[in-house]
Image: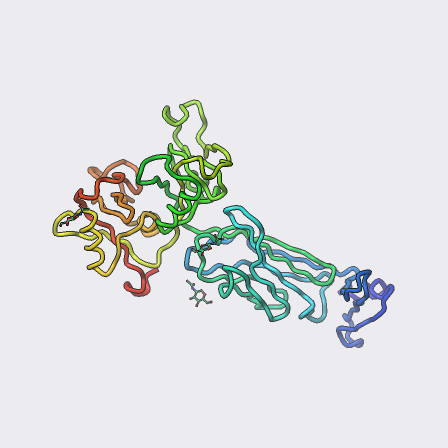
Length: 370
Ligand SMILES: *[C@@H]1O[C@H](CO)[C@@H](O)[C@H](O)[C@H]1NC(C)=O
Ligand SMILES: *[C@@H]1O[C@H](CO)[C@@H](O)[C@H](O)[C@H]1NC(C)=O
Ligand SMILES: *[C@@H]1O[C@H](CO)[C@@H](O)[C@H](O)[C@H]1NC(C)=O
């Protein structure tokens, strides 16, 4: 230990000298409290440095699940006794969708308080001295973003960040009325109605890396309008342009400009399945058929989540809650549409047309399936 050598420094100008350990212990050390210019009683470490870091710069989780965001703090030179209530830990959040940093949780010693939408869903782990890890439960689709762990002890103030990403699926969505019908607000609402949320740029970029190729521009959570191209072609800007996520930039009039949208969905607490009808059904009959089966017509976000996260594969087109007709293919084969996996769409046929239906049964009615 080098702590013995600090004593001379620590004693400089001391008004009040407190020994944290018995003076007979060889590695004891001293700090001093002093009244600063504003009359606040601050604790000032002379030469003792506070450090904060995280074992993981990013954490992946799923909707409804838990996330553990590591953060620990320590002192150099090492302290011989815990600082307890003198340490304040604050977690805050900058949404991936953009916006201001908001408070998540503040803790002093073993007491903590959580805020807003995080109330009752977050706590500090405190498994060992200096453990400021945040444990979050019941994750929501819009919990993604940068979480900042800030530790304050006297004049020392250090922080680190952990990025929370959800595993899920991005899907393009258009209004039943046709392409380019959605204002930004309309886009937000359309995603929510399909059990999803506006996709972030990071989520769209990840989908593009996984091969997403879509020629219609859609809103993202940050108010920009973009589209992902993996195979440049003539109606999509031509062969001359490189593959990439192309941006129309931020649209300043969120009301006037109209586009499609990219939505994001993550794991389901229930199950999506194709209901085998004795005969094909119009939209009204399809709704009744799901109800009679103790379910409801599946939403578009639910069908995408089942396709991407559970490998749902079914060659029959079925009604969905928004009045569209689609089918999910994970293993492309003859007579099952395009040669790539995907949720294939027949658009929004007239409601009297006859099809099968995809139903969604929530987990309360299907046991413990996640
Ligand atoms: C999340 O954490 C809570 C409480 O710590 C626990 O009861 C629950 O089983 C966890 N859920 C998952 C999906 O791991
Ligand atoms: C996140 O989504 C929940 C419901 O899914 C909603 O109540 C909450 O307001 C949303 N939070 C933000 C910051 O948009
Ligand atoms: C569907 O068919 C039923 C008769 O089985 C009819 O009453 C209903 O109006 C039809 N709905 C639509 C949307 O065509």
